[in-house]
Length: 207
Ligand SMILES: [Zn+2]
Image (cartoon, rainbow, N blue to C red; front, side, top):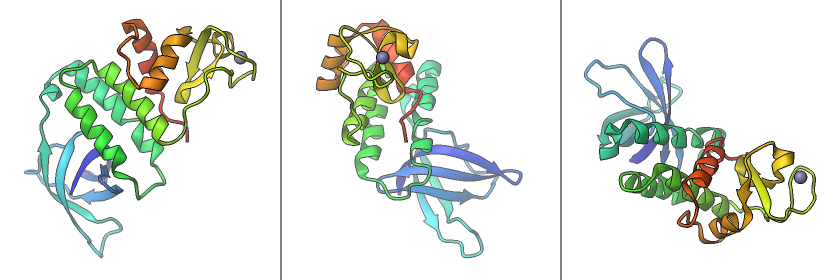
């Protein structure tokens, strides 16, 4: 099987519970400590085998091999990858089966991470997820006060639209955002807007 490590929880002394986003499921597996085992990190793409262990409450994960992406050696890119991966575990906390959309999205993001700005990839992938889950909102109405939004707009967690005064947050250009929401591309957005949007995306998804 293949998947991205969403979370590692240490149990007992050195054993781990590994949460993996696979092609069809969110798997939770037990990994016994072994000195010769390779070190696992959140965000790794791994190949692995699963062994149902009747004595244990979780299946065991074994024969793990890790796909190395070049950017894993770039501190800043790795830091953004960890932050991006971190939004998925809370989103799927009570979920077991998922569509292959999420695995493919992470795989595509991991491939783009090398050559493109991780912040732009995060914003674009976040929009893809919102669209896939039917969570994009009309930018004409503030979700806090319910009144119309003219030119100045802010986004809050989940990319929900609000007035800058209602959200107490950075002002963004509504035209730029409309372009982003329609095209799914950050091409015409300034680096400053992308910085703001990336930080909002990294607050996570709602629900
Ligand atoms: Zn408002």
